[in-house]
Image 1: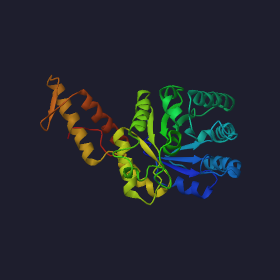
Image 2: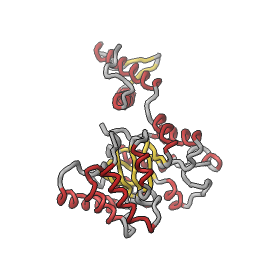
Image 3: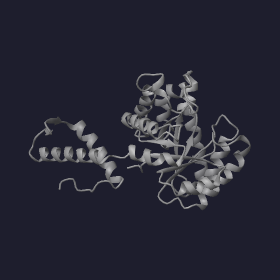
Image 4: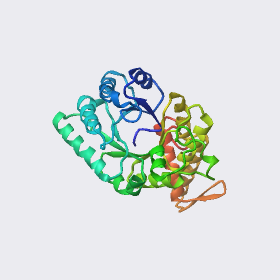
Length: 311
């Protein structure tokens, strides 16, 4: 089972002091960013700082990724080549921004093939695709199937909003104040489509960051919605957001107890030769059991439950 990616802390690539702090944070994933958070004149030095951080810091059990610049810039190919060439052994995956077409993933995958053939050894570097435009969303099924290296699809809310001409309702444009202009969840369809495309290919689905890091209630609401839609985690832009995101995307004690009750009832029914089971006056079927088993497996992986179901 893939390591949890509940919280993905984005850290500017040119700020080494922040790399050190991120390595000691409680985030499941630290993403060293070479794209939007880095000024144009700092791109080359950011690349060097990221390589140094990958090679020299103790990341413990963390998953460490790097977001490169897009292939439509003069920086993206160089980011991929230099970072993987010089620090690929410490890198779990590269995050490709603004993926509009499967060709973006094909390009990254073939480049990684060549780099790994030349430098050899280690675990192959995975790819994560960020969907940030109407074109990318239209092509999402083909993007999800583009490479066996792909491990996740990520929703890029701000650029996607700009792409479709959606209204700007907050300073950051990252999921704030949505309830003021739209009844319900404005990004339900887009996020639902991303989740469907990801899960059809056994990929993780990751939600965009929440822009106001001083609004924990808004963050919790946004994270709870994306979790309910089937997302596996959410980007964070500030360390203060990590605890909330980890909690929302972890099974609660109540959910774990419910899953255990369902699985125990189903096992008892099977032992008795029955094709169905009842829990608290409600019939359960195999679909219910699959949901319960998935949650139970998550709880085991996170150390929130013990392997033995029946007490």
